[in-house]
Length: 415
Ligand code: FAD
Image 1 (cartoon, rainbow, N blue to C red):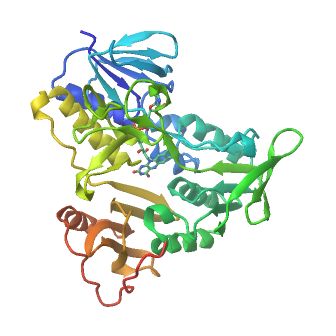
Image 2: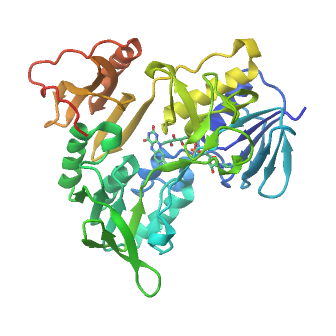
Image 3: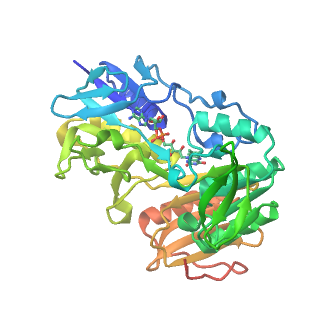
């Protein structure tokens, strides 16, 4: 038999492979990875690695099970032939499979070439190699760093760079950082932390283009509001697109937003049928989330990669009549500006947010996001002890909890 092939040798790929072995799969197992490294952990890249506390190579993920796998590292899958059940790799070789697990994750969105993207000194941060070159650039002592995008990675990078004492400006089109993920009510607390750290925060505007010197090094950014910012190092933290380009023409429902799968994590064909032999997990998956009315989501969080990979592996080994739906409550953590931030649930569609413990001013609080009176997400700022209880309430669809005495008044989100 050709066995099982896992495409993408990172968090979801590794955890999926482990779950296959733990689930009793004894056949051939191959992991294909575009990067030349054994699976490693990305969260430290924008935290301890950027801070210089951890070498990029020290992020390797523990392998918890004897995988007995064939590793094809440093070669990307470039084409899928579902009829022949083969994939072609960038080195020209062809691998046959009986079942396939797609775990190719996501890629940092690059700065567009037409707007100065080819200049040196413009970095993205997604993988080990990115972290290594960014770290080298930081050690060289930039005069001013510009971070484009106040999402999780942009904010974590700003926090690290301020700890290193580097001059930082962060530009984001929204009124606050993390506006899309957490809303502006909470984002305003991050904006205050960002400014208190000594970073300059420029909300409500966008970088239009970068300009370079004669040697092709970035020197300044031109903004939509007509102003310019001098910067010799740029971190473009523009979010990620799913690594699905190699699936063009494979007849799957796949695009830069992900590979659509059914509740059992089986990839859908372009016509909408579930493939019995192709499963999807991790950042690359776009899946129906039962807790939120079955709408399709793709979640870029560590815990989803781990749990969805294990779930997909379980279904890969199960009979067609015993395919279990993936029931997952999304959750992530972030550390920035000395604060541990945790979110459970999805905030999209929230029409209320209430601080239920602590206060925003103290930067220790717990907030619940509601929609039509029901809890849909809970956020903790250095206050994680009670989060599991709120997660239970979200799973159960409980009403938004009452506000305690001194807490902030509930507010309707305006963003
Ligand atoms: P990825 O980790 O993206 O791995 C996909 C792998 O597939 C890559 O190695 C890629 O090279 C490979 N690949 C792609 N295309 C192909 C191909 N055609 N053939 C072969 N291989 C291919 N989440 C949190 O919850 N908390 C955090 O604090 C946090 N911090 C983060 C910080 C950074 C800097 C980054 C980048 C992410 C962070 N995340 C965090 C998100 C988390 O790391 C991801 O959700 C997780 O890595 C997803 O795992 P994955 O295996 O699905 O995809």
